[in-house]
Amino acid sequence: MRTHALFLTTALAAGLLAAAPTAAAAPSGLSGDFNGDGHRDLALAAPYAALPGKGMSGYAAVGYGTSAGISTAKRTVVHQDSTGVPGSAEAEDAFGAALAVADTNGDGYGELAIGVVFEDIGEDEDTGSVVVMRGSAAGVSGTGAKNLTQSTSGVPGAAEDMDYFGSDVHLSDVTRDGRADLAVTAGFENEGVGAVWTLRSTTAGVSTAGAKSFGSSAVGMPTEYGAFGANLAN
Ligand SMILES: [Ca+2]
Ligand SMILES: [Ca+2]
Ligand SMILES: [Ca+2]
Ligand SMILES: [Ca+2]
Image 1 (cartoon, protein in one colour):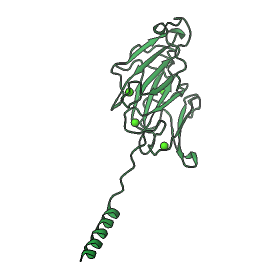
Image 2 (image 1 turned 90 degrees about the horizontal axis):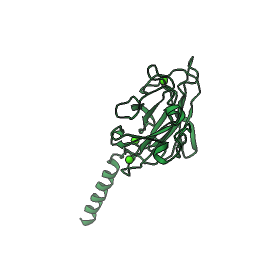
Image 3 (image 1 turned 30 degrees about the vertical axis):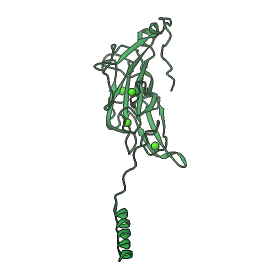
Image 4 (image 1 turned 180 degrees about the vertical axis):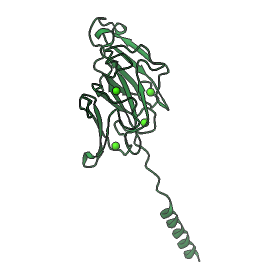
């Protein structure tokens, strides 16, 4: 009797285990992992590659990491006319002139920040913008993509000719809340002096709340032409 009961209990347990749904693996949260599968991925850009009739409009791409290395077959390729990507592809946008990768909303999937350094805004030429595309289990996607410029509400400054906003971008969690914050350089701000913007992230990703900018004088450097912030270390 005792043996019989034990057998039933064991069989029941085994059956339950077999029937239990397989839980989706939690996204890795690793830096540089867009699809959360635990393999870091490679983002790259061809900022001067042309869409038809649009010279230097630019492309960005992700090759996903696999146990055999970076895959070119398992990939995402985007440009400014891709579904969900803010703005539109035009000649000499240089979409992808700068890239950064990290998780901005704390969901375990990395986001891709893309500098569109020569984007025109209204009548202003080569002003620049930054696009942030979200990661997901399916990789980088247009869903929830954001666009930031000096004309965006909450972003200090004003969009002007030749700011080159987005000449460099950087993502890292400077506030230590588990969400990567964004830094953006406008390398030609104020006729080549240059300036840097810092934006914090929330559970909704990069936010303009509390956005700041600073120039060379804030750190005691010369205030003339100098491309301040032209390189942000990643
Ligand atoms: Ca991955
Ligand atoms: Ca554009
Ligand atoms: Ca994320
Ligand atoms: Ca943060």
